[in-house]
Amino acid sequence: MAGVQGFYPPRTATGRASLIPAPPWHYSGDLLTVEYRTDPGRVRELLPEPLELAPEDPGAVALIWADWQSCGESRAELLDPVRAQYKECFAVVRCGYRGRTYSRCVFIWVDKDFAVARGIHQGYPKKLGSIQMTRPHPYGPAPRIAAGAAFGATLAAADRRLAQAVVTLRAPSETNGFVNAHPMAHHRQLPAIDGKGLALDELVASGAASFEGGQAWAGDAELDLFDAPTEELSALTVEEPIGAYYRQVGVTWSGGTLLERAL
Image 1 (cartoon, rainbow, N blue to C red):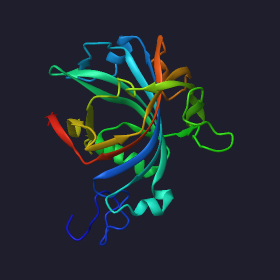
Image 2: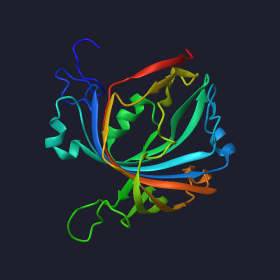
Image 3: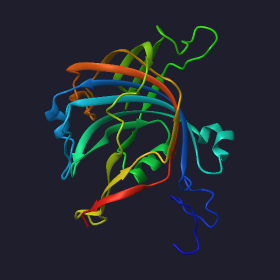
Image 4: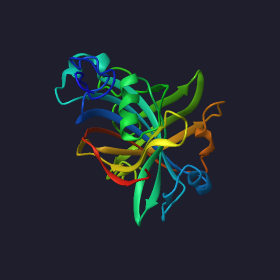
Protein backbone atom coordinates (compact mmCIF):
# COMPACT_ATOMS: atom_id res chain seq x y z
CA MET A 1 0.00 0.00 0.00
CA ALA A 2 1.36 3.40 -1.03
CA GLY A 3 2.39 5.71 1.79
CA VAL A 4 2.73 3.05 4.49
CA GLN A 5 5.56 0.73 5.47
CA GLY A 6 6.16 -2.45 7.42
CA PHE A 7 6.65 -6.11 6.57
CA TYR A 8 3.56 -7.17 8.52
CA PRO A 9 0.47 -5.33 9.81
CA PRO A 10 -0.13 -2.86 11.26
CA ARG A 11 1.54 -0.86 8.47
CA THR A 12 2.15 2.82 9.16
CA ALA A 13 4.00 5.80 7.73
CA THR A 14 7.15 4.75 9.60
CA GLY A 15 6.66 0.98 9.81
CA ARG A 16 7.65 1.04 13.47
CA ALA A 17 4.38 -0.57 14.63
CA SER A 18 4.75 -3.63 12.37
CA LEU A 19 4.38 -6.78 14.49
CA ILE A 20 7.43 -8.45 12.94
CA PRO A 21 10.37 -7.25 10.82
CA ALA A 22 11.19 -8.64 7.40
CA PRO A 23 13.31 -11.81 7.28
CA PRO A 24 15.94 -13.00 7.89
CA TRP A 25 14.94 -14.08 11.38
CA HIS A 26 17.52 -15.42 13.81
CA TYR A 27 16.93 -17.83 16.70
CA SER A 28 18.96 -19.10 19.66
CA GLY A 29 17.30 -21.77 21.71
CA ASP A 30 17.13 -24.94 23.78
CA LEU A 31 15.25 -27.87 22.21
CA LEU A 32 13.75 -30.79 24.11
CA THR A 33 12.54 -33.47 21.67
CA VAL A 34 10.49 -36.61 22.32
CA GLU A 35 10.07 -39.05 19.42
CA TYR A 36 7.57 -41.90 19.30
CA ARG A 37 5.44 -43.95 16.92
CA THR A 38 1.70 -43.58 16.50
CA ASP A 39 -0.85 -45.19 14.19
CA PRO A 40 0.17 -44.12 10.63
CA GLY A 41 -3.52 -43.68 9.87
CA ARG A 42 -3.61 -40.79 12.34
CA VAL A 43 -0.71 -39.13 10.52
CA ARG A 44 -2.39 -39.68 7.16
CA GLU A 45 -5.50 -37.84 8.37
CA LEU A 46 -3.38 -34.71 8.84
CA LEU A 47 -1.78 -34.71 5.38
CA PRO A 48 -3.72 -32.83 2.70
CA GLU A 49 -3.20 -33.69 -0.95
CA PRO A 50 -0.78 -33.90 -2.65
CA LEU A 51 1.22 -34.98 0.44
CA GLU A 52 1.54 -38.67 1.23
CA LEU A 53 2.80 -40.73 4.13
CA ALA A 54 6.58 -40.98 4.38
CA PRO A 55 7.76 -44.24 2.77
CA GLU A 56 9.77 -45.23 5.86
CA ASP A 57 8.49 -45.20 9.45
CA PRO A 58 5.29 -43.35 8.49
CA GLY A 59 3.93 -43.22 12.04
CA ALA A 60 6.94 -41.44 13.57
CA VAL A 61 6.15 -38.26 15.52
CA ALA A 62 8.35 -35.69 17.25
CA LEU A 63 6.91 -33.51 20.02
CA ILE A 64 9.35 -30.66 20.55
CA TRP A 65 9.57 -28.03 23.28
CA ALA A 66 11.70 -24.96 22.54
CA ASP A 67 12.82 -21.96 24.59
CA TRP A 68 13.87 -19.25 22.11
CA GLN A 69 15.50 -15.87 21.87
CA SER A 70 14.80 -14.45 18.42
CA CYS A 71 15.43 -11.30 16.44
CA GLY A 72 15.50 -9.65 13.04
CA GLU A 73 18.58 -8.52 11.20
CA SER A 74 19.15 -5.48 13.44
CA ARG A 75 19.33 -7.67 16.59
CA ALA A 76 17.49 -4.86 18.42
CA GLU A 77 15.04 -7.29 20.03
CA LEU A 78 17.81 -8.94 22.01
CA LEU A 79 18.16 -5.77 24.11
CA ASP A 80 14.38 -5.57 24.59
CA PRO A 81 13.72 -9.14 25.78
CA VAL A 82 9.93 -8.92 25.75
CA ARG A 83 10.23 -8.72 21.94
CA ALA A 84 12.79 -11.53 21.69
CA GLN A 85 11.94 -14.34 24.09
CA TYR A 86 9.21 -16.91 23.65
CA LYS A 87 8.51 -20.61 24.07
CA GLU A 88 6.75 -23.09 21.83
CA CYS A 89 5.72 -26.72 21.61
CA PHE A 90 5.10 -28.38 18.27
CA ALA A 91 4.28 -31.77 16.81
CA VAL A 92 6.16 -32.82 13.68
CA VAL A 93 5.52 -35.77 11.36
CA ARG A 94 7.14 -36.74 8.08
CA CYS A 95 5.52 -36.87 4.65
CA GLY A 96 6.29 -37.64 1.03
CA TYR A 97 6.01 -35.30 -1.95
CA ARG A 98 7.13 -36.29 -5.44
CA GLY A 99 9.56 -38.90 -4.18
CA ARG A 100 11.16 -36.76 -1.47
CA THR A 101 10.66 -36.93 2.29
CA TYR A 102 9.76 -33.74 4.17
CA SER A 103 9.03 -32.85 7.76
CA ARG A 104 5.72 -31.14 8.51
CA CYS A 105 4.48 -29.36 11.60
CA VAL A 106 0.88 -30.45 12.20
CA PHE A 107 0.23 -28.74 15.57
CA ILE A 108 2.07 -25.89 17.29
CA TRP A 109 1.52 -23.58 20.26
CA VAL A 110 3.49 -20.43 21.12
CA ASP A 111 3.19 -17.88 23.91
CA LYS A 112 3.76 -14.57 22.05
CA ASP A 113 1.83 -12.79 19.30
CA PHE A 114 4.91 -12.04 17.16
CA ALA A 115 5.64 -15.79 17.01
CA VAL A 116 2.09 -16.42 15.76
CA ALA A 117 2.59 -13.82 13.02
CA ARG A 118 5.85 -15.37 11.86
CA GLY A 119 4.16 -18.75 11.76
CA ILE A 120 1.33 -17.50 9.56
CA HIS A 121 3.90 -16.26 7.06
CA GLN A 122 5.84 -19.54 7.13
CA GLY A 123 2.81 -21.86 7.03
CA TYR A 124 2.99 -23.12 10.63
CA PRO A 125 -0.48 -23.67 12.18
CA LYS A 126 0.35 -21.65 15.30
CA LYS A 127 -2.00 -21.11 18.24
CA LEU A 128 -1.47 -19.43 21.59
CA GLY A 129 -0.60 -21.66 24.53
CA SER A 130 1.33 -21.94 27.78
CA ILE A 131 4.65 -23.72 27.43
CA GLN A 132 7.08 -24.49 30.25
CA MET A 133 10.36 -26.40 30.31
CA THR A 134 13.22 -26.89 32.75
CA ARG A 135 16.24 -24.69 32.02
CA PRO A 136 19.76 -26.02 32.57
CA HIS A 137 22.23 -24.07 34.70
CA PRO A 138 25.74 -24.84 35.93
CA TYR A 139 25.00 -23.81 39.54
CA GLY A 140 22.40 -24.60 42.17
CA PRO A 141 19.63 -27.17 41.85
CA ALA A 142 18.97 -26.80 38.12
CA PRO A 143 20.10 -29.74 35.97
CA ARG A 144 23.41 -29.65 34.15
CA ILE A 145 23.60 -30.90 30.57
CA ALA A 146 25.07 -34.25 31.58
CA ALA A 147 24.18 -37.91 31.98
CA GLY A 148 21.41 -38.39 34.50
CA ALA A 149 20.01 -34.85 34.23
CA ALA A 150 16.20 -34.73 34.18
CA PHE A 151 14.15 -32.08 32.36
CA GLY A 152 10.41 -31.54 32.63
CA ALA A 153 8.14 -29.90 30.06
CA THR A 154 4.46 -29.05 29.89
CA LEU A 155 2.02 -27.71 27.31
CA ALA A 156 -1.39 -26.15 28.01
CA ALA A 157 -3.90 -24.16 25.96
CA ALA A 158 -7.26 -22.61 26.83
CA ASP A 159 -6.83 -23.67 30.49
CA ARG A 160 -6.31 -27.35 29.61
CA ARG A 161 -3.06 -29.31 29.89
CA LEU A 162 -2.35 -31.01 26.57
CA ALA A 163 1.01 -32.70 27.15
CA GLN A 164 3.67 -33.31 29.75
CA ALA A 165 7.06 -34.98 29.53
CA VAL A 166 10.09 -35.86 31.62
CA VAL A 167 13.33 -36.46 29.74
CA THR A 168 16.37 -38.00 31.45
CA LEU A 169 19.64 -37.58 29.57
CA ARG A 170 21.68 -40.70 29.01
CA ALA A 171 24.68 -39.97 26.73
CA PRO A 172 25.95 -37.69 23.95
CA SER A 173 24.30 -38.32 20.59
CA GLU A 174 25.31 -37.83 16.96
CA THR A 175 21.83 -36.56 16.09
CA ASN A 176 18.91 -34.67 17.59
CA GLY A 177 16.42 -37.18 16.20
CA PHE A 178 15.21 -37.93 12.67
CA VAL A 179 11.58 -36.80 12.41
CA ASN A 180 12.36 -33.08 12.25
CA ALA A 181 15.52 -33.52 10.18
CA HIS A 182 14.13 -32.70 6.71
CA PRO A 183 13.03 -29.49 4.97
CA MET A 184 9.54 -28.48 6.06
CA ALA A 185 6.57 -28.86 3.70
CA HIS A 186 3.85 -26.43 4.77
CA HIS A 187 0.70 -24.87 3.35
CA ARG A 188 0.24 -21.10 3.31
CA GLN A 189 -3.53 -20.60 3.11
CA LEU A 190 -5.90 -17.66 3.51
CA PRO A 191 -9.70 -17.95 3.16
CA ALA A 192 -11.28 -15.64 0.59
CA ILE A 193 -13.10 -12.64 2.05
CA ASP A 194 -16.43 -13.78 0.56
CA GLY A 195 -16.04 -17.22 2.12
CA LYS A 196 -15.76 -18.93 -1.26
CA GLY A 197 -12.59 -21.01 -1.24
CA LEU A 198 -9.08 -19.73 -0.62
CA ALA A 199 -7.50 -16.46 -1.66
CA LEU A 200 -4.04 -17.92 -1.01
CA ASP A 201 -3.19 -21.62 -1.36
CA GLU A 202 0.50 -22.49 -1.62
CA LEU A 203 2.52 -25.57 -0.75
CA VAL A 204 5.98 -24.36 0.23
CA ALA A 205 9.26 -25.86 1.40
CA SER A 206 11.63 -24.16 3.79
CA GLY A 207 14.47 -24.86 6.13
CA ALA A 208 17.35 -23.24 7.95
CA ALA A 209 19.49 -20.85 5.91
CA SER A 210 22.21 -21.44 8.50
CA PHE A 211 22.52 -23.69 11.54
CA GLU A 212 24.91 -24.27 14.42
CA GLY A 213 24.42 -26.44 17.43
CA GLY A 214 25.99 -27.72 20.58
CA GLN A 215 26.46 -31.33 21.53
CA ALA A 216 23.22 -33.27 21.23
CA TRP A 217 22.26 -35.58 24.08
CA ALA A 218 20.05 -38.65 23.86
CA GLY A 219 17.83 -39.80 26.70
CA ASP A 220 14.70 -41.56 27.79
CA ALA A 221 11.28 -39.94 28.01
CA GLU A 222 7.98 -40.29 29.83
CA LEU A 223 5.29 -38.60 27.72
CA ASP A 224 1.57 -38.13 28.43
CA LEU A 225 -1.00 -36.55 26.10
CA PHE A 226 -4.40 -35.31 27.28
CA ASP A 227 -7.77 -34.75 25.64
CA ALA A 228 -9.23 -31.25 25.34
CA PRO A 229 -12.43 -29.92 23.78
CA THR A 230 -10.78 -27.87 21.03
CA GLU A 231 -7.48 -29.70 20.48
CA GLU A 232 -6.52 -32.92 18.67
CA LEU A 233 -2.92 -33.55 19.71
CA SER A 234 -4.02 -36.53 21.80
CA ALA A 235 -5.18 -38.30 18.61
CA LEU A 236 -1.47 -38.86 17.87
CA THR A 237 -1.39 -41.51 20.58
CA VAL A 238 1.91 -42.83 21.90
CA GLU A 239 2.06 -46.41 20.60
CA GLU A 240 5.83 -46.98 20.92
CA PRO A 241 8.59 -44.74 22.36
CA ILE A 242 11.57 -44.06 20.12
CA GLY A 243 13.79 -41.75 22.15
CA ALA A 244 14.41 -38.26 23.45
CA TYR A 245 17.00 -35.53 22.86
CA TYR A 246 18.29 -32.24 24.22
CA ARG A 247 20.28 -29.71 22.21
CA GLN A 248 21.11 -26.01 22.15
CA VAL A 249 20.99 -24.51 18.66
CA GLY A 250 21.27 -21.34 16.59
CA VAL A 251 19.20 -21.03 13.41
CA THR A 252 18.54 -18.45 10.70
CA TRP A 253 15.39 -18.50 8.52
CA SER A 254 15.31 -16.36 5.40
CA GLY A 255 12.48 -17.65 3.22
CA GLY A 256 11.22 -20.70 1.38
CA THR A 257 10.51 -22.21 -2.03
CA LEU A 258 7.16 -22.58 -3.76
CA LEU A 259 6.41 -26.25 -4.49
CA GLU A 260 3.02 -25.68 -6.06
CA ARG A 261 0.21 -23.12 -6.08
CA ALA A 262 -3.41 -24.23 -6.27
CA LEU A 263 -4.72 -20.87 -7.46
